[in-house]
Amino acid sequence: MNDAQTIAVQVVGVEQITPLIKHFKLALPEGGDLPAFSGGSHIIVVMNGATRVHRNPYSLLSAPHQLGAYEIGVRRIEESRGGSHFMHDSVRVGSRLEIAHPVNLFGLDKIARKHLLIAGGIGITPILAQLEDLHGGDVPYELHYSVRSPEHAAFLDRLQRREGGRVRMYYDSEQQLIDFDALLANQPLGTHVYVCGPAGMIKHVISTARAYGWSDSHIHWEQFSAPPVGDAFEVFLARSKLSVHVPPDRSLLESIEAAGVEVPYLCRGGVCGFCHTRVLELDGELLHNDHYLSDADKAKAKSIMPCVSRARCKSLVLDL
Ligand code: FES
Image 1 (cartoon, helix red, strand yellow):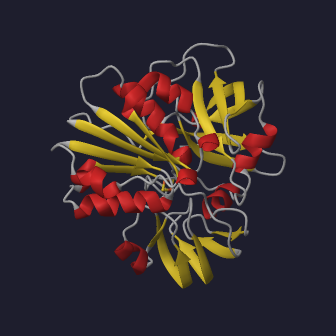
Image 2 (cartoon, helix red, strand yellow):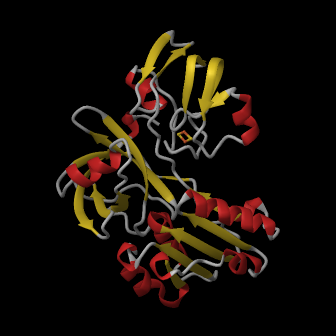
């Protein structure tokens, strides 16, 4: 993926829907249909800020059969390095953005006998599009949606209008917690579970499902990590013969790109594995933040996912 493959879009709608989440609609400036996608897909939004370019992944929440505009929800993340702030503070109706073609890393299983959907907070966004794919079909499904309080329940009207009794809400403010044991212990054979939300929720769903004997092929989750800030470090790209400085507020991937070296990517959130890069030499430690490498691979320190991971090191040589 590179910027030559992006699509120019215009912002045709912006709405603050909760204290933290803005809802954006993106369309082709000349009108017409955007590329087709399926529920669970995400796009990368390229934001050309005054001093830097941000490329952030956002799930598409609109109905896959309505291609006149893509819809995304962006949660303002105070500790972020700027992408969500840019979307909240600088993007308005009429703004131009670049987006990458949709990619689905969180698709619905086509032969599932039932779909059990679990969302926490902004994690509702890919599930909204999945629901559009499921709505009116023969396969049963239900949604369990947890938020901190009613004012943080994004898209609740839409959900209740479309899905009615299939949606069960849980409000932290009212001490309503999802009973994952009860939910995962008693599902019909052939059920697939999909979870998107905070890291703790995803981890808990995965471990609870495994404890009740669910096969990993029936457990689906998505969580894009935001690249964390960290100490600056230097990296040497062996094939390009380039030294690259990685400042505290830039990811390793962004720093390599700024030096003119392309690294393949799909998610920029530590999920897809496309940016997998071999570590040739290391004096120090890798700070893995991805959800792709196994714990064993992380311990070997022979690979890094530069979209979200960093290093604390005297020297690092990558196979790029
Ligand atoms: S781009 Fe997907 S894991 Fe790095």
